Length: 598
Image (cartoon, rainbow, N blue to C red):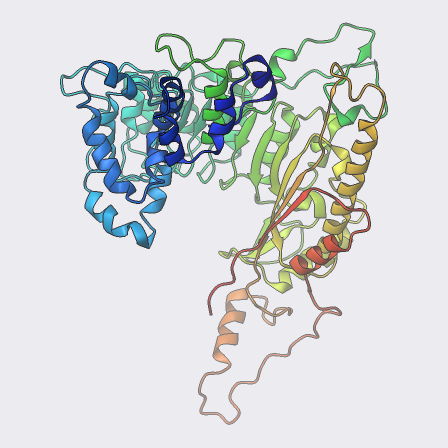
């Protein structure tokens, strides 16, 4: 349960609703036994999400088995109304406990009962069930869900279903069961894509689907268009960790992303209008109406989605739509939130995606392959996203608020990895920073926080943990500019009309900067002796072998090391942040992978 907002407290003051959020399970049980009024208030809180409540008990797995056994045996009458209070079945907290040592014994006793078949069969007796999350549960056999002993189907409208990380489940029954026809949120990530997946999901219909997660299903470009069938109603799509190419980007642009929002021309604007969200624009010709497609950032995670629908929707009446037609969740805006990293995209596909639409509010492309950039490095993979900064600026009309992309948009330096490796070596790092950066001075444009104050979350990927100067210096410069952006927003907040309730909303600017690093492979910097990477590695490994010749093999001539030692990026950034003169109050997240065990 979430805290009531200010308007709710003023309109309907209720002391119980304020302090109930701070009560634990035992306290809520005690409150429900005080008076009838308190019972009517606390009982829905205890039964709305019973699995989450059970997971907080000392014997959660045994209590779950007892709970599900008694559920369908509740007598018809007043007691059965308690069963109708169940809105959510969230097994995620319970699944997380099975790996803890303290719960393994009781989980072993209940493991045979806690399966999807057993759960769905008992869930058929919950008339008002709306949200189901069974991620990671065991699957014994596929049977039609929501079927009672008398054969009658479950009549409820399920709005959210999450079955991720269940490789043995057949997700085809989701497409054919009537209980899931009104789904708004569907997550079947990391399940098994059967041979008839394409056929089943091309003939099914989810007219109200708004959030779809198809992560890790090994989807190709031919699978994607048939798995999505409701056009511009779908506004959040997660297809990370698949086999999609640039051709999928073209399909998304043509079918599921609306044309760019028209920008006003010949308009009279103020110098700080970029700091506001949808500021008034005065122009000679009539303004194009785009309010239908300008919506705030909508939650597309399970917790955020459930909280929004529970707060703004009507879940009590089975035959009534859960949300009004004018609600932001239901507006046909086309895709505004796209997660497509971990595929076979190239920088050209991402470049086209950024330049052909201004509708996206959330975009995760991660690191993608780029051309070799004429560095003459054999057996190497180049990762970069260059020449795309213009599409990320406010002047382009972009609506991006959350962005995950390769660090080259800020550092102007690629990531060069040895073939078939996820770690870099210092030789390639030296070429990427010194040779490439020096050659491209003035030719590449870097993204600055002042270019787009609408972006409030930025994640830069595949940053090397060491640097010869250019990457580290540009990251420091970027953080310094974050402080400058923050200062400009503070000044704009004190301007005339900024605090007025009818004035435009002031943007927050960048509040979270997440830096995802990759480790080096421990190799020393040096120029190849043979020009063949495999031959060099074989020669290096054979240097210590036994030899009948006195002195063994002669080592190849080693070139002199670089003029400067590589700097440790993480340590230097932490020290720089600590000693900044003009402080930036945003959040800096440094994600460093663990070094491989020796």
